[in-house]
Image (tube, rainbow over the protein chains, first blue to last red):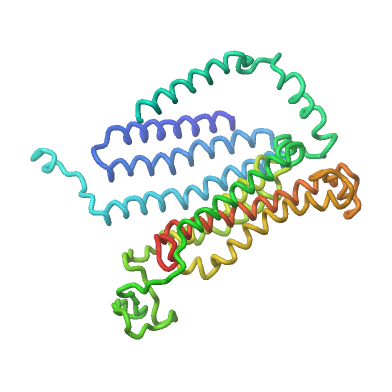
Length: 109
Length: 276
């Protein structure tokens, strides 16, 4: 039962990853590409890793609990650092004067 | 000249390729390395050194000389950066920027003007000043202590899990660089000054070589840690395990300090006053 739930979590995490990868390739400019990159880092990793943590917990023991806890710790740190990294990269882009993409701008080119 | 060097490169490349034709195939179980050397390590590493992580046992014990000189190479890299980049004569800049913290007003003080000291009221800021970003500052401040703890764990636990002095030292050095990036260079230099980092780097190499020499004094070969059992009362096998831990600490110190030292010199163009 737990393994089915964890499988669903991992697969939906993989869907996030796939969407993020497509987004990085297909979006038109720097800022919009950062958006799927940040999403895939946080949401995709959160889902796949929590699925794995659940899967480890199928045989319940202290060692398994410790492993699951470590996996969830990774998630916590990614939750803190990944949006910060995305924020600072976007910030650096703004400061160095990179204009954001807009539809009119593309037509005028 | 260009044509001559091209011919040289092609010639040597051809000689090297010709020489590599005698090599055993990649992953060949009959190659000399996998007939004598690797099986010996795999069979005897735990028996000899009580270290479950065979990579650590090979790097720090069986081939201790190799790792000692790797550490020396890293120290030399730090020294070379220092000698090439560091500027000892301080030519004063045309102006310095200070910020009044309460009001946020920035003062430009030209050369010869009276400069306020860093305090609760005034703070020196870089000439290419980027406003402080609260999000980045707080997130870095939140993560740094955990990262440093993790770095110490990687060094101390190098026998049992992947890791060791090099990796732990790199993580520790990276946390200090993260502090310098998220705040400013000056506040990090106030915590870990250049003198401290250079001394720690040489201390790290000294610990490694000193432990080797200690084994020599105790009447064994250089870096044969089993003789350390005369100093710490454990069996000679456990003494080798502890010896590995001690030199890993030396390596970690050297790597972390050299990373920080190189960063200081690179980022401020050798002036150590302002940087990224």
